[in-house]
Image 1 (spheres, rainbow, N blue to C red):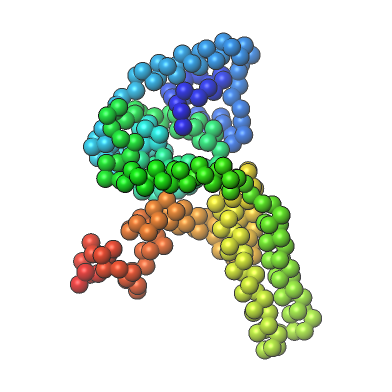
Image 2 (tube, rainbow, N blue to C red; image 1 turned 60 degrees about the vertical axis):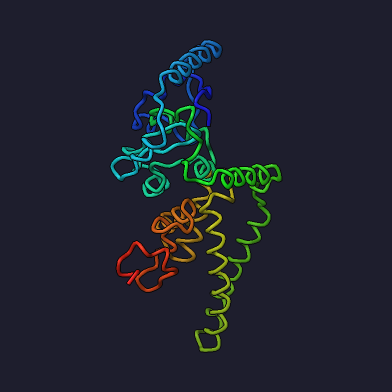
Length: 292
């Protein structure tokens, strides 16, 4: 993300309060030029961006990593430092996702978890407090830089192959066979009653349809079906809340943490299964009762 992106007519977004941005900018709202000429607006925008860039404070990783508490959260995106402490509870993806990256570089996960980067930038700009010092690496010094580069190259390769472009025919057929199985199970009960043989048979139908609903709502929850996030959320609510009877908010709250910190204890709730199950002693060694 580049901070010198041109937002025509936006006056000092860096200095605006987050509440103002939340009220004034919808997901698809375009900045208003207030009747001024486009060239003059661009010149003003460029001048203010240059001023903001020159006045940015510079921080070392040692200082950034000290701000990793619930009441003090800094994170880094594309070498820019953001203070998200006061905004974390309003984060649409949940405050724990931001807390998990407090004091760390969040560049790659930021790119992976947001569809409309231009819209997200409007909410990032007021949180900007500085940038990494020139001599500092792009990520924490204890990270494997080669591994980070490999994943970034993998993403570029997948983007070049259009692997992130949804196949609507596939998703339509997936949804269609779920609805057919659900409808068929209901018709069988309505026509033949609820005897043992009927119950056993429709249990197979519903098992298949419910599992497929779980897979499809997973894709919708990740905004993989449509380009508009709202359509994805509506589809997820239909599949998860109406067909399966589960909470989409609960699932998103848990699953987003799993993807941003996969298999990292205790930040990944999917592996936080103690005390009933202990996956590996080394993972749970910080817990006294687990080590004993």
